[in-house]
Image 1 (tube, rainbow, N blue to C red):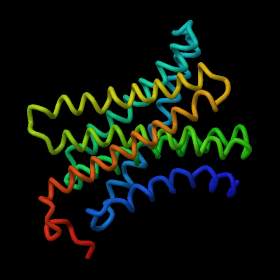
Image 2 (cartoon, helix red, strand yellow; image 1 turned 180 degrees about the vertical axis):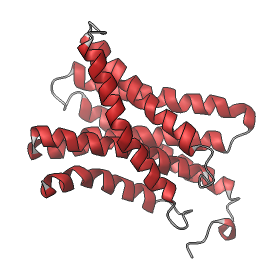
Image 3 (cartoon, helix red, strand yellow; image 1 turned 135 degrees about the vertical axis):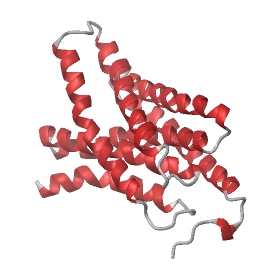
Image 4 (cartoon, rainbow, N blue to C red; image 1 turned 120 degrees about the vertical axis):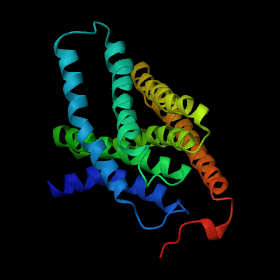
Length: 229
């Protein structure tokens, strides 16, 4: 059991560590990062419950609508709602790159619990492929969503609603495309893997852009960047 939990948690921890270590503006780690992870972990259960109810009631007669479109919308909507309500106006949201960290934290909280439940049911044989596909994809959806929250937080007021809306729309589109790549192609070499390569490129592009926004936010003056002391 300990081995299984370690394997389930390790991919999310590794991905978050990579994103956190790239944050050159970080001072002391904010407790909001841990809280965001917990929020995402707790979200897993109401999301799974809603999906179960819709499946049991036969709301969708089309499997594509249920397994691809609906799951994309509901998962990203709940994560977006948590970021909007619990994180967006928080005092520890200090610069645009923080959006990346908080978005990834919420998504990785969800992905980690989902991964634990999946590995408990299907065993360690699927651990590697899940680390590469579901866990990393959720992290990157969170990166993109968090990027737009960071952009909204530090934009002029008349642009904020647009960026907050785009945080949801962009992550839903990416999640839908990822689910579609799994649904349409049985062989992940033709579907999921090419899409994941694109998603990594796009996610890292948003990380780079968030760094640039944060540099602009601090006026590119090293003395204005929070100290680690």
